[in-house]
Image (tube, rainbow, N blue to C red; front, side):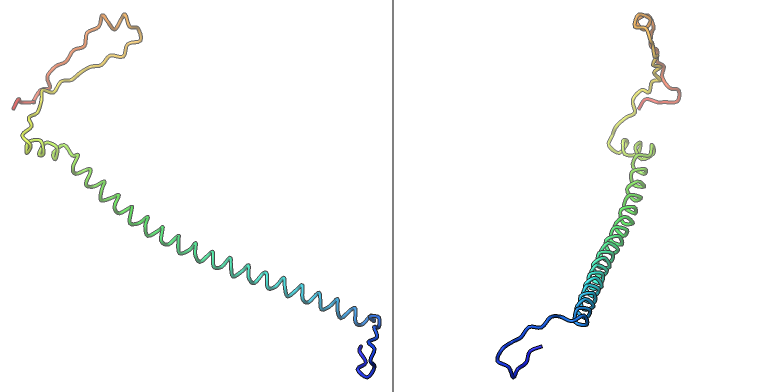
Length: 130
């Protein structure tokens, strides 16, 4: 303690009560710092969770849109590649159907045997020349 009436400042040693008060003050400051750190971490984590949640919703909407587009494209592809549509388009372009042959491909293990075998083909019944 400082005596203001005296021109000299005298130091005195800390008493046990003063030390326990300082130790308790340090403990409270540490506890407060830890609680503030936890609060900031909690806010930061919550902010990141909200951001990721919004991003997931956006990706989910995009996924639904792409799935719908994919379904439309598959339906269009199936309609374009159907045999009836191909025949209609080929007639529209003035193409004629070629002779259709059945070809039998023989799988031979020995090359010498393959040279002696013959491939055969025959015209499919019901195909008319145009």
